[in-house]
Image (cartoon, rainbow over all chains, first blue to last red; front, top):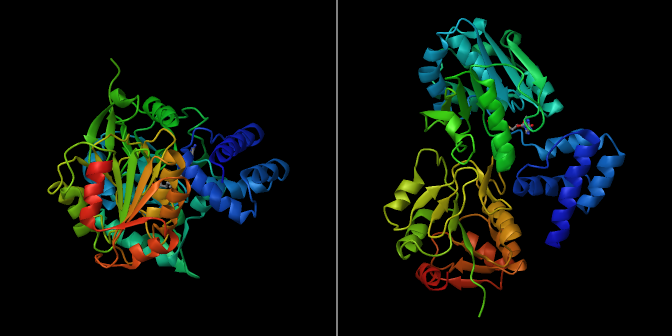
Length: 275
Length: 188
Ligand SMILES: C[S@@+](CC[C@H](N)C(=O)[O-])C[C@H]1O[C@@H](n2cnc3c(N)ncnc32)[C@H](O)[C@@H]1O
């Protein structure tokens, strides 16, 4: 395929989605978008991105499904156990000193990360004084997150991750198995607020003590990463914690001066005080 | 006189460590186009491949972080459990989307996105391995005018991957590891 044409079509499609539906993918990493779109073209039986654009503009039912292609929902409970271990052993002792806590999980996908966090806080005895904000731009993902239902064949991995993260309880205490699914306990949702929030276009909505935003920024270009990290910076009090994905870093961001390393291996940072 | 590649992408699977060590240990110091490598490793989270290879290579070996800029004379390794892609500005981006060819990182994913950005300024290399990952990506590289090398299958620890690449890319050059190393020193 002629590369130039392809790039033009991509830009036009993203502009169309933005103008019509206000979802802003214009500053997403194009390498990944192109891959996702190639899959979407197959699914929607379109030969070109222009055809897909036509369909997105004239058939409003296309967008929700297209969103599931443009965003990546892959996750696990206690994904990267050493990260959760570091939260447990190094971050929790600091959080314990606050009478009430707020935690924000931007890009919560199907909820794996927020349930991990609630379980970890329950084990640490901090759940009752904490509010968890679980946000995403994908409405379907948020619904699945709220349902807290995962295929039973993934639970073995979740259990092993939880154990490696230093879990002090048994993961099976938190779900019931039925019809090939593990359904996580309603009580875990008591302190969670699920909500639509876009790191590309929405503003700060609360002051929070811990932000865990993992494997979301990798899909953004640097400019958009900067916007998102700016939001995090403005949502955190002095010494507030920011945790990123295993291979993400604020090293290449313009906000690098706004944070200090807390646990560099696990990509946990603290908000530096303003001068 | 043909154009010099600005980036080298390399993929290997079963037998990768020995093959890549042989190539890297033969390289001259800190010159040449950046080399980006995808290696399939089972349970790679426990083995730190970069450290392992660094002992045998005079060029800095870096495990890719998201939005890592490419520098000449450096070698980049895909981290376990992430695809590596090339951005428009030639920095490296990561993705945790589904495995491709049962692999994450996948060689095809890197090769295809690198071909898209670098067009004819790219050299792709397929080494030993027991699957077919990379064959499609190497074809893409040749189709955009880039260059392609494949490890001589009879020499490979596992010849399935070179064989698959030769099948999709009969126009690629087939070489031994030593020749590949030499080629990189002299031509890149
Ligand atoms: C790979 S998942 C991350 C899941 C989990 N945090 C983890 O690390 O396992 C990425 C999520 O980011 C969401 N996302 C993408 N763009 C976003 C944006 N602009 N604002 C908020 N969330 C976004 C996607 O919908 C997707 O659910």
